[in-house]
Image (cartoon, rainbow, N blue to C red; front, top):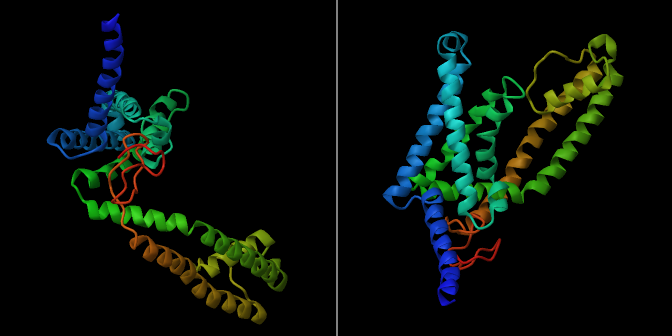
Amino acid sequence: MDWLDEERHVAPRTQARWRKFLHKVIFEADTPVEKGFDVLLIISILASVAAVMLDSIAAVRAQHGSLLYKIEWFFTLLFTVEYILRLLSVGRPVKYVTSFFGVVDLLAIVPTYLSLILPGSQYLLVIRILRILRVFRILKLVPYLGEARLLMQALRASGRKIAVFLYTVLTLVVIFGSMMYVIEGEEHGFSSIPRSIYWAIVTMTTVGYGDISPQTDLGQALASLVMILGYGIIAVPTGIVTVEMSQAFSRKVSTQPCPECNAKGHDNEARYCKFCGAAL
């Protein structure tokens, strides 16, 4: 019975080594094999996106529609296998599925299967171009990866403040739109409060389409106030994000992904993942 016990211990170790090797090949780019995998992946992504774009041209589709259809399914099946391998190579697949690249990888294959039910949805496959973002890891552009990660951290940290700011702006455009509806009325193009709110949004954001404009002196005075206020409001979210970015840049993080949940953003000295507790 000793050989049975030995096999029970050997099997998990073999599986762990296999999963570790698969994770390194798919998610890292340190060795020639790992870089070669990512280069082939990016070439496949570019080729698949090009095929989708060509299929949208009527003249090309009329002559080569059958070939493009086969190419589309070939890449979809290829990316499906790759997606499954990614799920198998991480210790916590749910973490990967809900991550940014996990969602992008899933959206890269869903439209083709969806086109069997909803014709035309296969053109959404151009979202595969987002997968090219992995080129930063392949080329070892670590500073760019770090800057992008810090920017995302700053945006997440600014979320609540920007939400309050947008709520304030929404309140202002409703007030100014309602006031302009009362001042100008339907005879000057402000036919309803929602349409007047549309004017307030266009004016406050300094877009200024000009399809609706106040004609009375009081209306023009209110419009002037909204325009001046708009210039001041534009600077607010910029300042919020700038403060959060300066704080994020002061905290250096590692680019090593967790082998279990594939999360990034750990401290340079970290030995364990701060999201799942796995050893780094």
